[in-house]
Length: 199
Ligand code: 5GP
Image 1 (cartoon, rainbow, N blue to C red):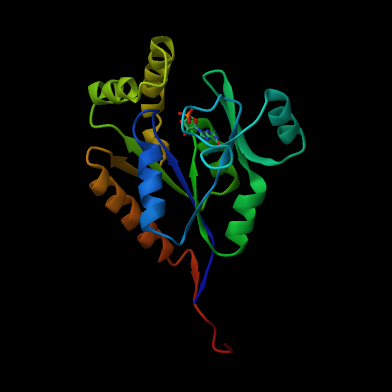
Image 2 (cartoon, helix red, strand yellow):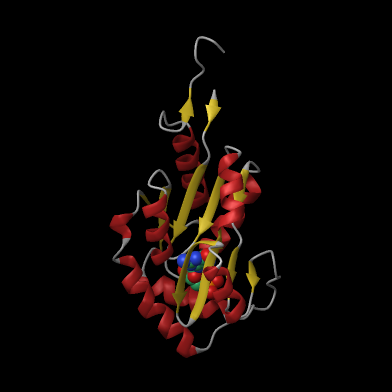
């Protein structure tokens, strides 16, 4: 059987634990690829260029847009974020599954170009838990946290545009659900070309 590549988009409000979930997913499923985004936001302590993000200046980012190097991009609370097209395309051409952790504006752009993608939205168990998690991170000012919380409310209204919704209450349970969705979607008749009589 020949497998088509599969694009998996994961969105959800900041602080919901998307990053932790994706890291756990990638450690447990070694056949998955991850798309490292480009951003103009300053790196947080512990983040490395080329690992969590490619950290670039606004000028460099705008040049990438101009040169058509980004599959999608969005401005999120004053910073730019975007997905480099080249890596995603290469992985899809090789029949691989690639994970994009991007915001709802980016997800809409991807959907318009790749309707066969799998769109998953991660939600917190409650708004209180979300604000506790954002504060617990200890990396952002109260103003940034307030902006991110306001944005989270807007984002949660877009759940209906996604194929799946996962509550991140217990990380292990959430990772298992993510893995199950990916396994099932990878077996979909939409994505697998069965061999013909001549093969
Ligand atoms: P953070 O600053 O917390 O790392 O990310 C802020 C938001 O930007 C998150 O919702 C994250 O999913 C989103 N994001 C990260 N990379 C990209 C990207 O390449 N494109 C878009 N549209 N959003 C992204």
